[in-house]
Image (cartoon, rainbow, N blue to C red; front, side, top):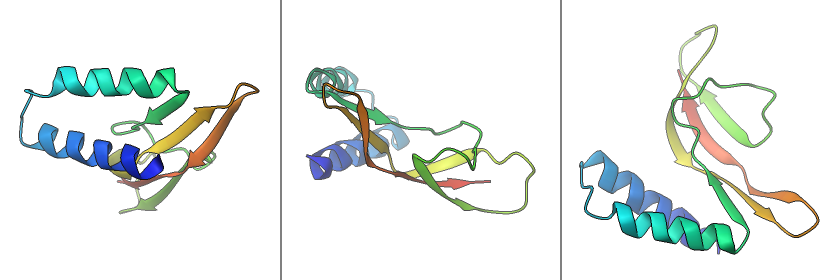
Length: 96
């Protein structure tokens, strides 16, 4: 399932980069179905990087005091297994 979620994330990112909004409704439906199955996909683009956040691994570019996440290579993926939320995949990001 992680591979499918990662592929959906890549397609969504590429369509966004190309300003193709034609698929927005389809992506919303897919995200809704994933949530119904207990999955949460976290895209932290634009957020301030916090070294204490264990759900992401970052490559820091430059030496900014408060780096911002500028690129997401892989999203963080969580699953609610009925007893709590489990991190299935760490997000891989670039922060500047």
